[in-house]
Image (cartoon, rainbow, N blue to C red; front, side, top):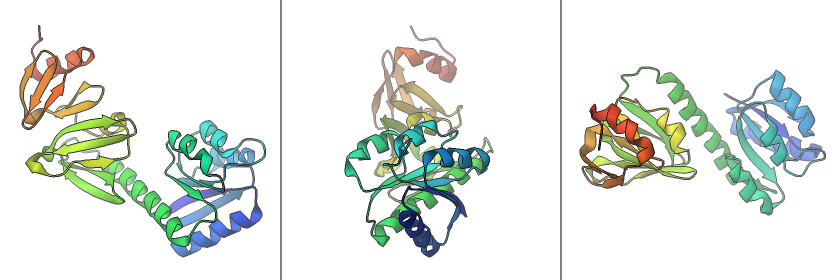
Length: 237
């Protein structure tokens, strides 16, 4: 069950979201607040997994609230204003809904939250350093990937592209390359550039400024040369 907080200065909007969540079934409303100050107190005293939040509210608005939260639950903005969308996604929110929200669109946002929560739990369970797979959230699904199948990972700002062996289509997932790097065994995966992580099992050749894998040639940044020393046991000239 996902625990959520609803924040909106309009009582009818609070009740509508709560009614919609009763139909969803797997998201429990832990609290409702009509302003950001009350929401911050709730977040400090009773942590939740997800918040549904309006943007235009008296005092702190929704954007400022997200910037000041004591920790980062998943956030879905529910607002009447489209022009805050870019700012919202720059804060790494899960979704951005425009009022009035069609029920099918609301369900899709909730499904995003469910899958993101499952991915988080999957990562939390993978404490065994000998694990052979990971889960990533891609195209509204949790996809299980064998680690040996990953040739390299490419960072694209707020997304990663996971390139697989065997000619399979790369997987695109909305997460940072740094957060994915933290989930990978460091004896197998090495950051060789700010935008690339390689699987050493698929490296065929290394030379100044370049790393060759089975199917690609990738840049090697000077700032990550220590990774090559750790990977090969040799210092490159």
